[in-house]
Length: 333
Ligand code: TRP
Image (cartoon, rainbow, N blue to C red; front, side, top):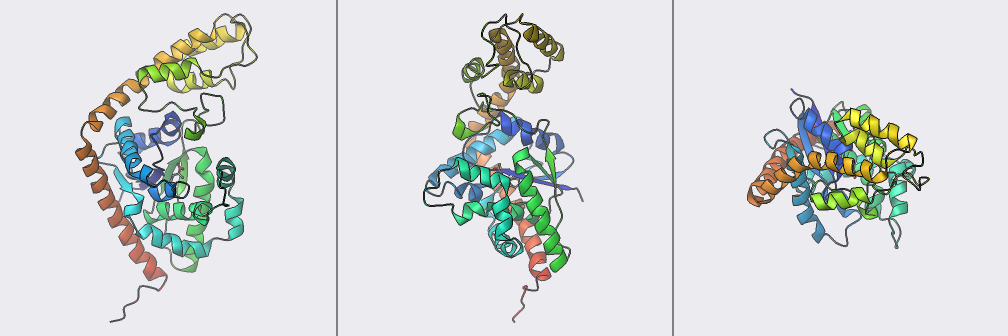
């Protein structure tokens, strides 16, 4: 039996280059080797969008389009809608007994997210405990590998702890997952901030038009210490060069630009124009495939439903084992 991959995204908007570098690229690369499930995590998205649940349906479609656009093959990869696998909710409840409140309070990613969000009435239990539900996502599929960005490492660690506890307490049913980080753990935002994030408006989306990409690139944050193109500039920590490193396949051009930048013999405009050219040729085929599938919404819906059906079958079979291991598979007839 092939090893499994499970990973996922919250359907709160279209996906961006940060998602690509962190996780999508690995999914595309490994889809032929691993039995791959990709969870469209609408239940998790609800934990901080419960006041606007109507946003989710349309975004499930957008995220599926992004998956297809980057080259996930729907014959291989199962796209699974989280809320349509109620077994996940059941497993989450059982897992709640295996995690302490103190552990949840220490999760650095959740802490950071709570700071960013403005929970006026306090932090909802659902949001605060979503790492438990994410552990259920991963383990119900018995995933061996979880391709994610760096910010998700605490979630994988939480899942591993739960698996160890479960297997020790009940029976060795669950698989301890491993995280797989992307080519770059964290792609900075176009504003030079630590990461791309929709709420910060510093993203380049996979579906952006050429014109949108050009605007984003030409207004990117660069070296703030550099006033004139003849000033020697900094390459390290400069997001324009980070993007060049990741997306410009012409390594010789990148090296030459870096050298000239350090010496003060190239302007930011030229460096950005070359980055735009590289990014646009990377994004052009993605944009094209996205448009092709967007024109066939019925086909996309079928892909989602078929993936969800197969995903649910796996989840149901794991839950049979889980209930048996926990001695709650009662036969009262
Ligand atoms: N928390 C992930 C994110 O914000 C999304 C997600 C939900 C996920 N369930 C998952 C990722 C399971 C990996 C595995 O992007």
